Image (tube, rainbow, N blue to C red; front, side, top):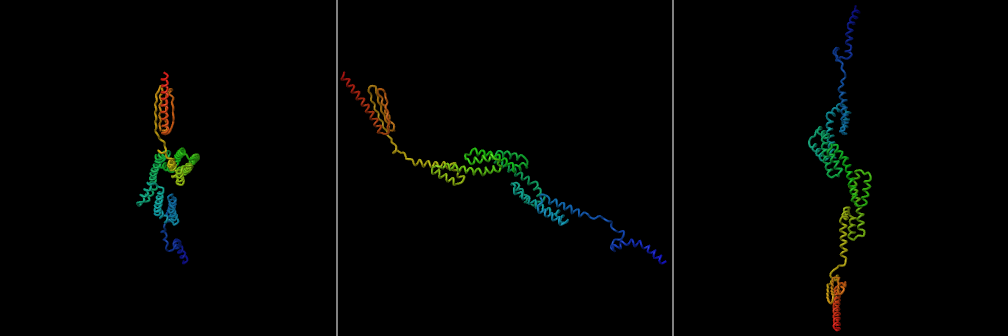
Length: 384
């Protein structure tokens, strides 16, 4: 009976032992059977957020506006883990972005016009926000730059040639991009056209061989706009001076002392001195040389000139003959005798003596004719 009772007791206790064994194996602190929590899936929110933050940071540092400092800080945040990445996205990137915009805007002032420079100064007078800096960099700076471009184009037009004026006016009527293109390339192409016209005009009006030959060589080639501009602004003046030197050397060769002196001084001076000599200096020096020559000639005065007056007139009349004589000490005297056939007698003398001789001769001739006539009348009376 005792064995049967032990077996029955064992059979009755076996299910309870089997049910209680897991709890025993887990320890005394394990929850009681029937109170176990329902199984759950692992929490995936933290890993997913970290991956999203990593992608966000990579996009931030890949932006064209991202500075090296921004890129370095982003990479460091990724390496430091989820908390560092979250801090970078929420705080650090905004602080660094403000600094990056400030630096970028300050760099704009290096090639900015007066309007853009004033706009930059005005922006930094107050406590600018990230939104203000971003709007200025992306919008305002372009508006101010276009205003400056309009002013610059108007200035260029005011002093430019025909081609520059035409292209500039067209740009003013176009878009901001048209104005930028004109200032970048268009103005130089138009200027090259005007420069060609100006070089042809210079060649036509210049007599020196050196400059003319260089202009012809340049225009017959394929010069760039920069080469044409440099020739007009620099080279032509150097070649003009070379031609001027040659011209001055020819002028003073065999010239008077004043001309040679002034010419040599010009050759030893500046290009402006040489141009001035050819324009006025040579003529002033020639005048001085001529005045010196005139002063060296023998003087002419009253003591060196013979002057005299003399007149003699004699008139004899008899029959049909009349004789008249005249003389002048001015250097020319003429005596005209008329009688019978009216033949003329002329003499030329210089001085009072000649006049007196001519006058005496005329008187003697008249007296002789009278005596001859009287003798003939006496002979006629005696014969009668």
